[in-house]
Length: 153
Image 1 (cartoon, rainbow, N blue to C red):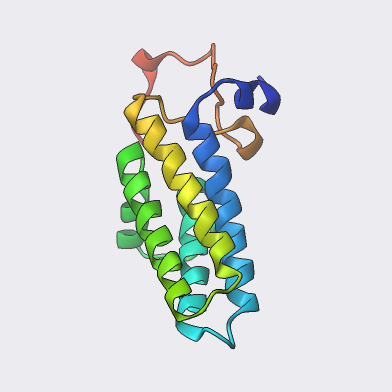
Image 2: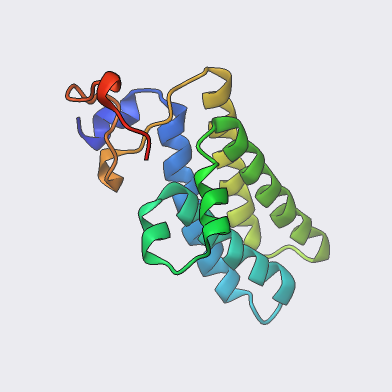
């Protein structure tokens, strides 16, 4: 199954994954751009961006030197509700930066809000958590997968 078929599947877990990755990249870039004008919120944006990428691409947990407690915390975010709450908190903090002055960090806040909304819809619809084949996951339909023989990693 290709990316186009995945996007047509109406699985909001996939939409949330793509938007969260976009949000992570935007938060890192926009945090770096505004680092001298809004130091605290820019650093928070960069940290939130890195966490977004680590949540959505667990391969980076193996590459980046992080502690076992951090790895365990990120791996615990497999539930749609927990991801929704995480991205909602990130979005609220980024929207709070607008109280100081409006900056380009609003773009990161908006995309993080959309990611939270996608995960909320996926949680309400009780959709299965899937990872896009574009990002190394199994995609929507994996005919070779038999849950009887799956082992928990």
